[in-house]
Length: 265
Image 1 (cartoon, rainbow, N blue to C red):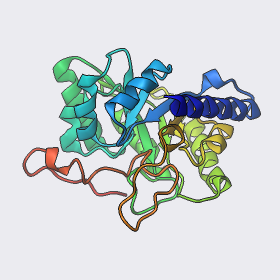
Image 2: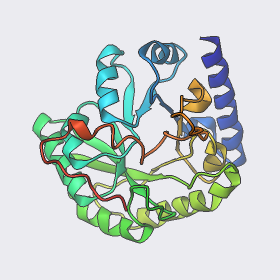
Image 3: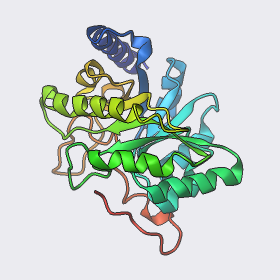
């Protein structure tokens, strides 16, 4: 456990320093511990160390873990969500970071209404227009919000931003800044039922820059739990697997027969 505690102490110190540089407190930044491929015993240690918010990329992996862990923690889905997996998400995750279509929002709303448990969501914006990643284009975010603001059981709380991978954290700064500016622009719409207060951006390799640019949530995996094993011959970049765009294939077997895979924008 000492390694995890040491890593957590270091991450919290880095969050605090980055928050200070942006004129904020570390209390203004929520640490989402991303537990992709992390075992129950290690997650239990993380809970004992004081972590309370956890993120998973794959619905199937989360469903195997959640029943084995305490109920006084919250779960965030930070990976891509296909519409035919919505029934597995409501009642388990407190927030979905990867809302990117009206159809997905309506399905979440329908499933949440059926069990009487609303769900919070962040709109994923593909600021860099990377073809391999999900998310709406920046110019499409306002239309999506207008279309979903009337849903009673899906509560939009902000945006999720992923910058293109780079070994240089500073390369992410323009994308994170664009995300912050877009959040402010969308907040000025004052849509009913929409609270544009949360900005989920930054992973292990670039979270300090993200905080400096206004992140209120950071999704940290490898900086806490160590590098994940990579497939043979494929090195694992730092922070890979800590946000949407990962894990869609692994969940494909869970869907309803004939369930569609949404086009990644």
